[in-house]
Length: 260
Image (cartoon, rainbow, N blue to C red; front, side, top):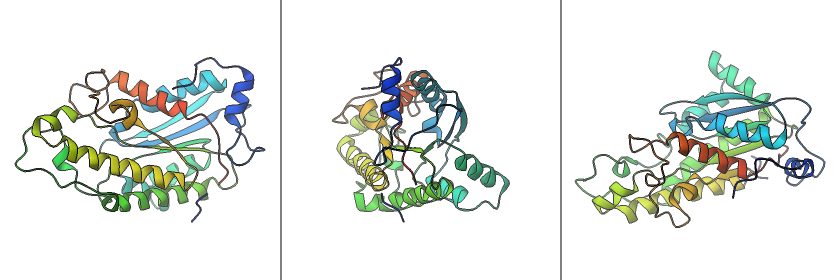
């Protein structure tokens, strides 16, 4: 296993070159003479984000970005792991082929099958029969393991080729209902533990983590993203404006490739 705010929309050629310089390898860079392929794998937390991000990338880098958007409702990280580890199905084979050809790869998924039960911190109903159990980093460790298995698969598929690899943490849409139910401290601790495990797993591979949590909920994770207009009417998913902000957070990480 290998462990190795937003940028302006108009940047000079010099700044673009600096953005494309590789972390840890000054000779590596993405080729701007050909279009870039962006493979975006996420659950519904990623609806609308891939194109918003690609639009910013195209304007900043002056390169066409071909989007392969696999944001899928209720997609678990475990399912992503299975797709990238086994090409026995037609879809998995096609996805692995897309990743093998992609200059930019984003991976995210819900914790079902690789983390604690989050049901108690969901936004419905606002009143709970009893407080949920707080989840610790140890509880979230299986999620980090699955994420690193995915990075291993991406590294294998992209071996020797400069690649921008990204993941993200999860914003907390239902903070108002947590407050109403008196469970904000418990659920915030669980969300922060999850975010910490994601960042730790990504850091070991040199993968950049977009903190949607910090952007939506503020640096202290006590701001209501619904009041900012970032949450849709269902109280759980991002709004159109929220998706744009998520793309901006990814864009702000720059485009430093790593060479798996």
